Amino acid sequence: MRKMKKVGGYLVVRFNAREMKEWGSTLGEYGVIDAELYTGCLDVDKGNLEFDGIDNLEEAIEQAKGLLDLTEKIETEHELRNQKEKEEAHFAGVEQMRNYEQNLRTAEKKEELTKQLEQARGFLNGLSICKVFSLSDVDYWNDVCQQIMKCRLEKYKRRRL
Image (cartoon, rainbow, N blue to C red; front, side):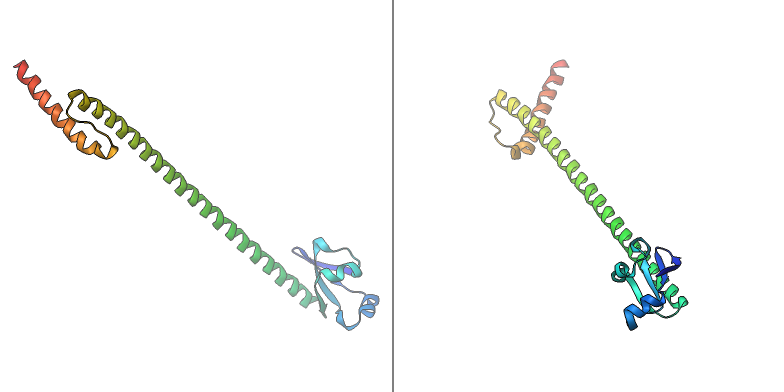
C-alpha cells in the first residue's frame, strides 16, 4: 500500500499487486483512509479504510473530497450547536441574574416596608390609637400616619401664626 495523494485529512492510497492478490476481489486498485490512522500495513489499515474498492485515481480523489466536505459539514454543525448552547446558557444566565436582581430589589423593598411598618407601629403605639400587627396593614397605616402628620403640621403652623 502506497500513499498517492493527500486530500485534507485523508490519504488516497494505491494497493500493490501482492495485496490485491491476497485480498481478492473485495479490494480495488485505490482506497481512502484517514491520514491520522494510516500505518502502511494493510492488515492493520483494512478496518480503518473509508473506501477500498475504487478502480481509478480520479474517483478515489473525489471520494476523499466528499469525505472532507462531509467532515467539514459535521464540524460546522457541531460548532453551530455549541454556539447555540453557549448562547442559550448565556441567556439563561442573564435571565437568572435578572430574577436574582428583581428578588433582591423585592427583598430590599420588603426590608424598607418593614422599617416603615416598625416606624408606624412605634408612632401609632406611642399615640395609643391602635396596634399594627402585619405587613399587609402598611399601606393603610401609612395613609393614617400621613393624615396624622398633616394634622400635626397644621397645628404647628397655627401656633406659629
